[in-house]
Amino acid sequence: MNGIPVLTLLTVLPVAGAMVALAAGKHARAVALVTTLAGLVLALMVWAQLPADGSIGLVERAAWAPSLGMEYHLGVDGLGALMLVLSAIVTLMSVDAAHHAHRQPNLYFCLVLLLEAGLFGSFTALNFFHWFLFWELSLIPAFFLIKLWGGPKRGPAATQFFVYTMAGSVALLLAFLAVFLSTGSMDFGQLTAMAQSGALEQAVNAHLGPVMMWLALGVLAGFAVKIPIMPFHTWLPAAYSEAPSPVTMLLTGAMSKMGVYGLLRIAVPLFGHQLAQIRTPLLTLAVVTVVMGAWAAAAQTDLKRVFAYSSVNHLGYCVLGIFALAVPATGAAVQASQAAALNGVILQMFNHGITAGALFWFIAMLQERSGGQRGIDDFGGLRKPAPVMAGLMGIVLFSSLGLPGLNGFVGEFLIFRGVFPLSWVAASVSILGLLVTAAVILTVIQKVFSGPVPDRWASFPDMHGGERLAIAPVIGLMLLLGLLPQVVVQNINPTVVNLLAHWRF
Image (cartoon, rainbow, N blue to C red; front, side, top):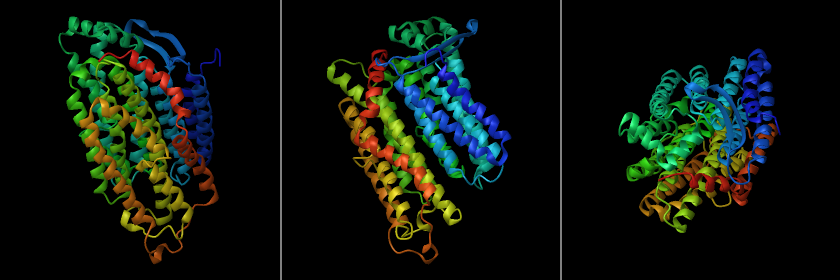
């Protein structure tokens, strides 16, 4: 790939595909499938070309508006490349699941591909201005996908989603403008180096006074809404439940990871010292997100709302791992715990994206076969008429539960392995989230697939050959990462070591 701007091509590809899909009419889904498959191939090429030392590779730089701190600066390390692969996989899954987008399919798939472009741009940009453009670009198609193709309450859900995330973006933008006014730079690498030496805080204090903590809180607010962290989560249940299931796959499988990625790429590198000062309140929010997310899931009867709150719970583990490592590395034991936690966070981001996307894919299949029903109590005994669906969805549910041998276990294990030595109280309380999640998942399995078969579901259609073929690679990936997590860890661990070496707590 020498001389080929592969990261630019990766971002331009879905934009070009979106334009073709818009003009393709009823063939728009085929265009989207080809585009997303090509995007996955490019993302895997990027993954295969990562520098062995965990540094930023495949760098593309060009002057943009130097006087305003704007530069076209792209690059990826293990973190960014893994998120590219995740985005490509989840978007492909979403397009495959949307084979019944009858109304304006050209516009629908155009927006999906534009959303993918926003994801790719966010995970490759290394200049704040460039990154923020794509951060916001992903918001616009997501809003219209909910607003135009969502459920009966799609209007309020889309508006709430837009207002919440826009408010977070405003807080983030204001904080970063203050950083730019103080330093004259929007480059993530340069600002990280300044933060590591203490020069960033000195520059901000010299220009604006002692406001560094307020800037850190503004950046945290932007990412807390996107992840989301409780109590900034109230937009999520409505958005996830009212969005079409294939769109929900994108929201939970890929877009929520933008918030966690932002913490690791921007918040911790630039404001790690400030995060360490408020570590206890942040850990408290993380524990609340883990435990209350699980309890909220247990209280739901709508399958989409169950797994919406379950997503809050699972991303809470990522937040727990990030905030727990905000301590000075005073010895080899602390460094090992930080590395374990951060490896777990990155792996959990990927694993949750795959598992949550697959769960909402199965919910889409249930809705399609039942005339739109998705309540836990609407079904029962489906294991008998649809044994293949029951078996495959059961694998995905057990992955979400964290069963050893499946991908959902590995990330959570590494997070708790790292967090326990760093904050045993937070880790111990968070165990409640694991227990409640297990109860929630087992309840879903029991009520949907076990027991007597109601007469109306006696001839419930099982998965056909095309659906089995489409879901097979996803199930295979879950098993592969559950049994051989080093396939991913060997590429992200050098990045983890490199990141920790440049962070100042």
